[in-house]
Length: 116
Length: 110
Image (tube, rainbow over all chains, first blue to last red; front, side):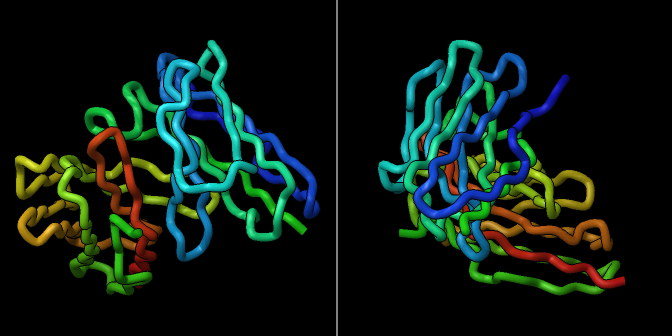
């Protein structure tokens, strides 16, 4: 069974630009969560979508947004990029959701964003 | 407000010895705890978990211990192998939330 697929794997943007990242979950998984990983900060929760609805949201500014499509694929968008947005953005899928049941998530390899 | 804390940013252990990674949490609503392992250029992968109704769960070389009264859990790896070198994230689940710690870099020296 195919794993979680994230595109693009690497990208470089400049301050003020916007970026869209894509995530295709494991087939049958209805929950998609997004995390930001930076050195020393661990995995910071961005948001979770379940059946096209945002179910949870982390403490990130409104420049960070996301959506989920009817096929469970998800996108996240960051507008007006800042240098501090440089990070690895990880997508994870699960059957029941990040906080539901066992909470076991299946992660993609991430999208490495560099903002210059 | 860091609800899940891994106070050791890094740990270095000799091959064959025990590795002990620690994690503390503050929120009593958490009732399920997980450990994930992450290699460079890869996403985290699930390693082992424990429910709050247990105090120990073992899977091969990996054992997780939970002390609910102290709100503390630990991951023991015995014996440690060079391939265990990775970043280990502790996570706590409950109330429709899953919160990760900052991670501990484990280096196993051969």
